[in-house]
Image 1 (spheres, rainbow, N blue to C red):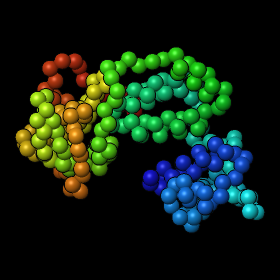
Image 2 (image 1 turned 60 degrees about the vertical axis):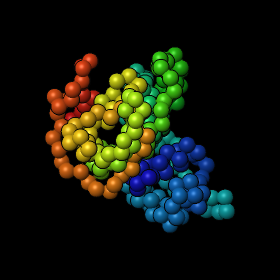
Image 3 (image 1 turned 45 degrees about the vertical axis):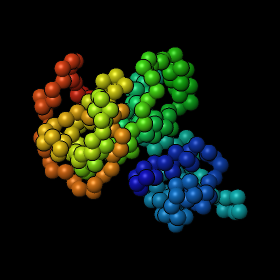
Image 4 (image 1 turned 45 degrees about the horizontal axis):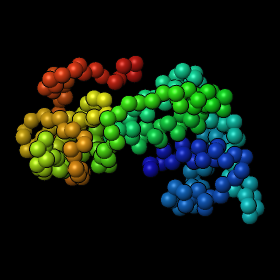
Amino acid sequence: MNRTDRLYALVEELRAVAPRPRSARWLAMKFDVSSRTIERDLSALQQSGVPIWAEPGRTGGYCLDPAHTLAPLGFTVDEALAVTISLGMLATSPFRDAATSALRKVVAVMDDRSLGETADLATRIHLLEDGPAVEMPPALTGALRTRNVLQIGYRDRAGIETSREIEPLGYVGKGRDWYLIAWCRLRHDIRAFKGERISTAVSTGERSPQRPFHIEDLDIPRGELRTVSTGMP
């Protein structure tokens, strides 16, 4: 967990138990850092205006105003439901863990009434899938962000596995199936690697060169591709 995520998580943790306190030692154990690091983080949050105060004594610790939220997003119930559904649909993707973390943050900034209504509506919505999700190697999650070359083990349709180095370029999702689009150094061309056929993925530590990536480069026989960036700046 990087420092920015830890700061956000600290506020979430204190808000969840407010007005009860959490000690620096307890928080340090939870986030697997030193008590001194936690104290520096809490001091930074206090200086940025987050209403955290210290309660002295053996049972004391750090407290947060329970009405405080780190980012008052102001979701309507329909918006919150749409976000919940969208993040839930990523449960079979390489972004599963990040989606789960993002949903916790959405929940943390909603008022109790809206949260209750959203949760009730969410129980009425189901996703029809062909079977259980296939566990994907953790290295796939940050592949686009880090641009690290990956050494993967990949099984073809016949079950024959090859080892190859690839340079991640993008992802394509179709239903519950996700494909990693990458430059394959074995084939010297762009390839689409089906997530459930990637048995292993390890970062080599090498940063891949900047390669152009266009939808037209993909040979997709069925369906139409659309971007997910609609509405983003």
